[in-house]
Length: 373
Figure 1: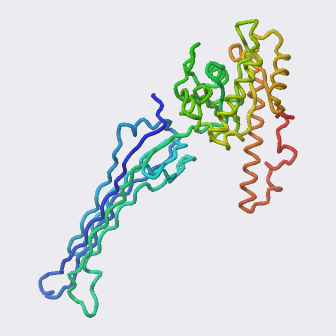
Figure 2 (figure 1 turned 90 degrees about the vertical axis):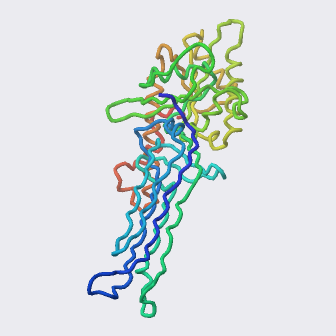
Figure 3 (figure 1 turned 30 degrees about the vertical axis):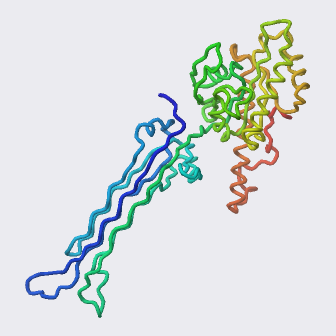
């Protein structure tokens, strides 16, 4: 299915039905009094996050969503029926903006989260509500209110634990195809990846994480160059970034390590320009295509020195799978510890005693296999 991560729609809620002005007229009851019922509520439009949907493509073709109006009130104390509501299913990770003001209205980041996009209009009051000791035959009633109407922009941000970052042809698609169930298109020309690819990496029956591959970045991406800038937003929800760096060179006279360092600096600068928060995310270096390097360990040490890098660093060959197992297990341990820490923080905010929680283990605030140690 084609991946669509942005769509503009219009939602129009239903108008409330009008109240009725009616009087009870039955045999032997000459002064029955007012019996006009209220109008029904107009239909509302909701959005609900559904983890079984992974694209906004349906909203490219169905741009207008209009709910029905409520029924008018009638005599004999009959209230008008409320109109049915409309619920739009969107992928988890969808942000909803006002298309006219660009204001963020909702951020649906968990399955089952439901929000009101446009509220239906309230029904009008029938004349039975206006009866009083001084007004025994009221002819007043009110009209139903108009429903809300909005133009909305839907923007999907992929939900993944790990995001792959790097230049075109750095080996991101090959890596995700080796370690997960994703099957991206792979070729030896730039921009093979045209949309984000999600893959589930399962390390055991009960442990797994989601990894995302986005189109490769080039210098100037934050200003619109290349394709990667269209998908930088997807990295904003990840917990950690894997910066994939190609350290190979087909030309023995070419200093591949120096070029790799220059490319890495350019990518990091694009992150900083695009979003400082993204720039501050945890980032690991993954040196790819080491099977094509004469002295892998020397290349790794030299690159870290050129980049003044003290963080986690791994050497792999995505095409052969060498080093990928160590990388995946280190990621799993780090993610487990990070999720445990977040759960404990949430419990603290809720006033729970985390010391009594079996998950609480201060000695594992950083996983034992974190390569930064």
